Length: 449
Ligand code: C2G
Image 1 (cartoon, rainbow, N blue to C red):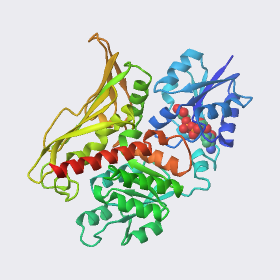
Image 2: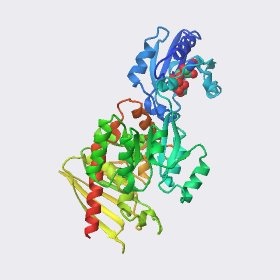
Image 3: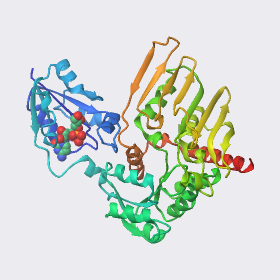
Image 4: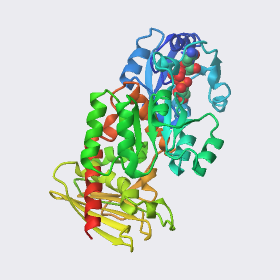
């Protein structure tokens, strides 16, 4: 029995996939098809897979030429499968030409001509022209954004709005670096050119810009903190829902595979019942700069609080939380270091942020059967450890975190703007609203100090 194996994502199953599988079967007597998991497709830079794996498996299995379907979910699996199933021929489309020659010592490798003119990404685009995106703000995060957006094929940044178009040196150098981006002199001009906006402007301006964009019928991805008031955040989400628009808060950790893996393991009870979450984000930031000087909301908590609150609202929930603040304030009443103590029934948490004081940027989650520790930069969650009573009993988990990680939230933004469901659990509106409430309460408390 001459066994053949091939692999694919097989998203939005189409004629090209069918023809490839039929020709693969013709290379032998028995065809095994490996269908790639969404996580592993992510790992390989495919951030917008639409069909759930069950659907993709069913589509492949429905072909008479397919004898067996397996799951593809990790690097190096192909060699394992070739040996495990006694494979004679590995085959794949010639868009991978040469990439699997390393399998030749194990079996015959055949690249089959790809069917021209059809692809899952084109099908994803059907009825959806590229998402034309406008930027508001052109500081550090906007520059990192431009590096990452290149990984999401169907998002095209086309214009930028800056409140001081003629005076900003940052704007001039940004536009010099990104010549395909047009300068929109007014917000209205920007909205005329785009389908969605990415807000990377100073925190205190987020609410007004997001509201203007939503009222103009534009989807919004807004850097954290979304707003500095719970009621403003709630108003924005209600406006987005009423207008059938996507509003996402850009806390990139919430969308990255490692953090999602961490949450699902904790929720599966791997460290028992959790009772404490401790998160810390500090970055020594020399003065003067926006973080210290912003007249409305300078300080460590408005800068890094969203990151440190995220695991707390994810693991303690959004109901019946109590919190209080402690801060080290400078002469301008700006917090160089803040600790927020949170409690909810028999659960507690502490979020620490620092601009002028350094601390261990770790995330620790404590439970009845062990604890999880993630070293800095835990907000770019890659490796984490599970510790038990026995100090030698340590499990290590490693995950992807590619580039600056914005590509994950951008993939989800496009996925949701395209009307696909099933990813909004990563950061729910009520979680963003609660974090905005805590931010609001902090600024009120700080003013009273
Ligand atoms: N294909 C084709 N013609 C097309 C589109 C795809 O012949 N018009 C082939 C691809 O070359 C591949 C298979 O169909 O062999 C599945 O394609 P995808 O679903 O895009 O999967 P891909 O990302 O190529 O995954 O680890 C290897 C990967 O899993 C391959």
